[in-house]
Image (cartoon, rainbow, N blue to C red; front, top):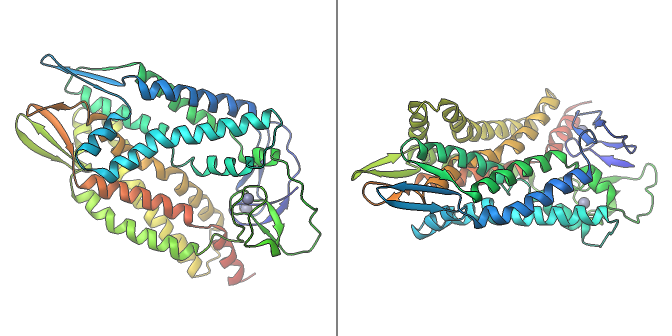
Length: 402
Ligand SMILES: [Zn+2]
Ligand SMILES: [Zn+2]
């Protein structure tokens, strides 16, 4: 089967792999297909269990906090309700999408697609549904919310008695299974299983590959819908450089207020205490929870900055038609795309402790200006890394010389 590398665009003939092997691109060393430790049955088992557990995880109580005879109970969606009622509408909508709605959509689609493949049924919309399941992968974040839950729990437990309910236990299981199902799924194997009746490609005719599913088609099909996944066929992602640059600039502008303004404001015995990202890290450090402090430093300050700097470097190297370190740059590009979603940890931490820390003037907390700027940085940098097309670095290098 002729296939195209999603990172460098090189066409290569890939035979069906025996179990327990990985095929790498001969040019950029990107893993093309992995059968070791992966399989459609395993991915289906993990995805369907994740979907099943998401229901009790969202319906049952996650945290319970008691103080002076008052009790506060929270569910996964309680943070969204708190943010919404305090007019943080944009943050509420994004947290609801990432933590509640999109996990259901993503794991619902994935379970359906894998079940149909296992039952050898191939409705026409199967490829389209699988493309959506893949595209929603980065945006559905039960695993990131789990880390936010751990940090939020630690911050509350440092001062108040807090217990984890059945909703919390189901959520932890669902998030761990979601990580397993990401690890067990090989996209190329699933794409290979979605059968198509296409005329054979003739040798030496110009070819293009789909930017979503890597299906190889004759070049004159450009602009039509991909017969497998339904996305419009383009040889490269359209206007990738300009769009990525615009998104990086917008994210950089928001990066400054995100770090200067407080993410939340605490009330303790009537005093207002603003909480910037740095203050949250210091508080965790002083409470002896320095590993969590290091984690928040990495996800909230270091990763967004490295993403902006890294993507900037990749854009400059396209502009300069650079031929140096292309394999390293390709790996960097994959890494940036993979780690971006973890920056949401701090926002989720606030969404976790916001609904339970509501004891009037004694101890309570509110979201603050920085949180909107910060979630803006995360979303814009994620969009930037998705809009960027690493194939352009290889094209530019080929233009630059042999
Ligand atoms: Zn490659
Ligand atoms: Zn396609």
